[in-house]
Image (cartoon, rainbow, N blue to C red; front, side, top):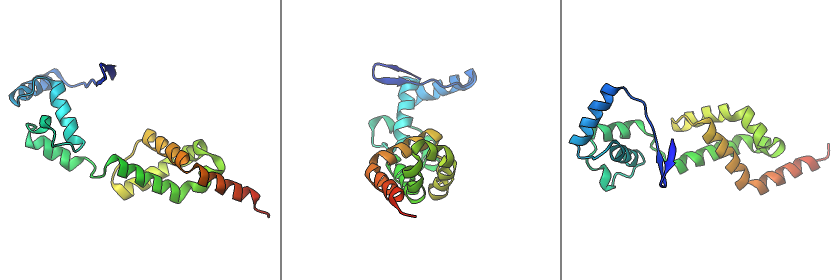
Amino acid sequence: MGKKANKTVSYIRISNNLAQKLDRRIKRLGYTSRSEFFTAVAYTALGKTNQETTKDLPKTTRDWIDTNLPKQTEDEILKTIHHLIAENLTAVIAMKGVDIAFENTWEDIRELCKEQTGIWTTESELREAYETFAAVHKTELTRYRENQLNKKP
């Protein structure tokens, strides 16, 4: 992917035969380009179907998107991950730090998230969630660490 004029340029690899069929369908639907068509698909996938650009997408495309995309918003997914981290890793992050906690637990949190939401998260999404959790809860994590270190045996 590249960037051009504040827009991301994305490339996909499909067979020539499939590309020709797709181009014919795109034109029949009234879109002027693959870019315009895939922009409409992206809006639909993100739940922005009230956009003018998505009205002419085939019903089968909208149905496929509705069936296959997560019902949770990105914020809801992040909230779930943060909840799982808080519930399971507060002590680890406070005592060992984000890097060690992430390295040793991300696959477990990924499994728990899949169980709760039905969504497979990526390693990079989880890395970001760990880091944002640590940043947002810095005071709480610092207090926990200090309490643990000041406990008398």
